[in-house]
Length: 81
Image (cartoon, rainbow, N blue to C red; front, side, top):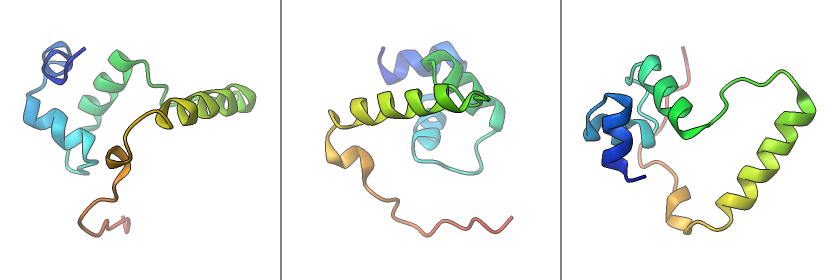
């Protein structure tokens, strides 16, 4: 699925999807949940064993991606809520 197809399916604009990808904290939580659901990304998991399995699978998948996909954000993130 292309980014444009994902944006259309989630009912968001392509620029908003780009902001989600970059971790923009101003994006609505609903948009993030919708995109995560479409992609099959679990946001909540109560079973520790299942969570460990999911994380291991994700790490194996991420190992196949180019390193630029994991470049640190250019700005400082303010986590003081």
